[in-house]
Image 1: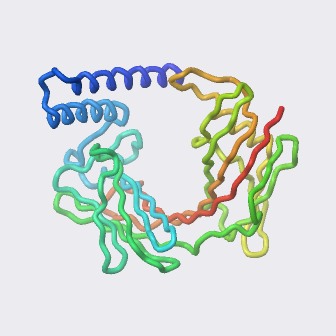
Image 2: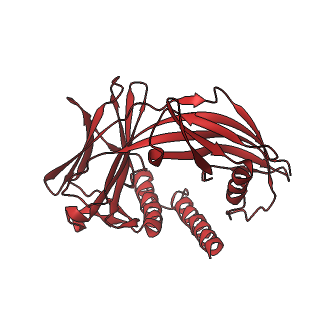
Image 3: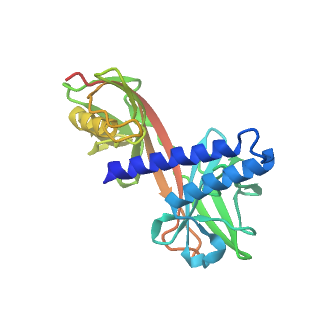
Length: 295
């Protein structure tokens, strides 16, 4: 069923792309601006067919769920996210005319802008602050009412061990990571990178799960372990996922990976919005892994 759905979406995307290209062909008697507007409408309609879009002006505030994450890199505080329908994360809410999203730290305020190509799916903005634990406010104005949410960063996470890149072998015993955080329930991990398969093709590992296990408390933080067999399974699971070009069952052989370890702190969202809203401050640290999955 998953493969059918993926292939269907892929074919629909090709049809949309063909339709857009036809609108933009010379001799179609469609002006550049008009052609671009029509193309954008087609693309947005296709995207909304998947996202089940709804306008915010059709919903009460209690049915609108904030989904925003704030991160800090040096003195740049980045806020990004969007709106969903309460208790239904398959429905994307598009801010209607008159609605606005902004973020602030102290007296500094920035308007969040649409970064989803005019589709009003994802909004983002940057603030400047050098404090180690700034408090960030998210302001959503809907139907003439202002809804304020806030979150305060936890101390920045750091990696106690290892101190540099690692080589991990499938036949080995795995590796341990020690982080300067005390609450393992606030930890999440993600993978970025690519793997080479045995047949010479490659696969992106962006959606791979990180199969870490909590070990216990260590001096200055907590420790975690990754078993190479579990990692191999996670990488091959993503590698074998169906795509528009088919399904490649060849095993993963070598990978250049970056594992990001993130500690999240949930903020206080406005009581006037959906009770499943989230505004999360996240700090992270990354370690580099060279994986050898020779079978």
